[in-house]
Amino acid sequence: MENAFLNSLVVGAVLLGCAVFSALAGDPDALFDFIVPPGVMPANVSANNFTFRATKADFVAGKLIVQKISLAELPTLDGAGVSMATLMFPPSVADPVHFHQRASELLQVTSGSLFVSFIDSLGRRFDQKLFAGDAFLFPKGMLHYQINLDPKKPAHAVAVFGSSNPGIVLLGPTLFGSGLNVEVLHQSFNISKETIEKLVAANTPHPL
Ligand SMILES: *[C@@H]1O[C@H](CO)[C@@H](O)[C@H](O)[C@H]1NC(C)=O
Ligand SMILES: *[C@@H]1O[C@H](CO)[C@@H](O)[C@H](O)[C@H]1NC(C)=O
Ligand SMILES: *[C@@H]1O[C@H](CO)[C@@H](O)[C@H](O)[C@H]1NC(C)=O
Image (cartoon, rainbow, N blue to C red; front, side, top):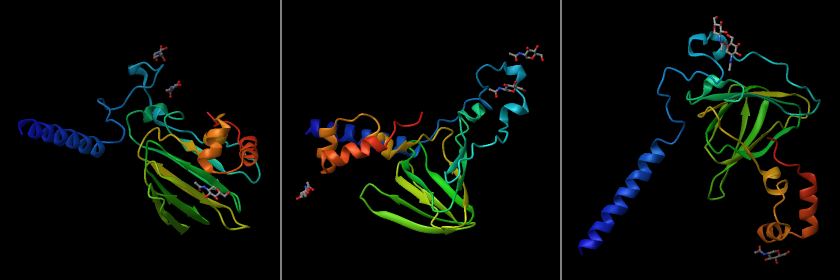
């Protein structure tokens, strides 16, 4: 009796701990006004260290252009709990299926239109068509994509993330570009080894 009561107390405490932990999930708050980036003397911090200057993105015709502004590009984002990206979609081009393991994403179309979708852990698909000014939430860790369905006009979007380092897991390279055992892939997807070998050949390793 006493044991059962103790057990339920322990279970209750663990569940409460999980609830508190998930409520606090996100980047930990910085304990200082800001975190001085590596290699900078505290007395030498300047406005430049909080500035991201536009760089000329490598333009490849027909390719999606993503300009990230996250921890890697702006080190003072450490502890700030935010980051962003701008995306330029040429006609008919997609941002391939991926998820961000550390942050929800709020994406706003700034010109043109996009078709977007995420899939939750029950396999439900949430599709939407967005026009300039519309925004859509991709919850943290959910598989998603965006595609410009217009065959003639480009589309532009801006995305904000609730982490300075949202991370990205691209599905194609993760599943088929990482050298996973072909037998395991065969059994996981119930498709022939020939098909898997084609998928492996078509997917280069995850870009670092
Ligand atoms: C910090 O600023 C001082 C004075 O402007 C300069 O002499 C020194 O080289 C700087 N140190 C670093 C690490 O940037
Ligand atoms: C910080 O700003 C100084 C110039 O004010 C610059 O020399 C330095 O590279 C910057 N460091 C980082 C990590 O942004
Ligand atoms: C695998 O695919 C075959 C057809 O190729 C089908 O008969 C079988 O039910 C599938 N198995 C599963 C577990 O989906």
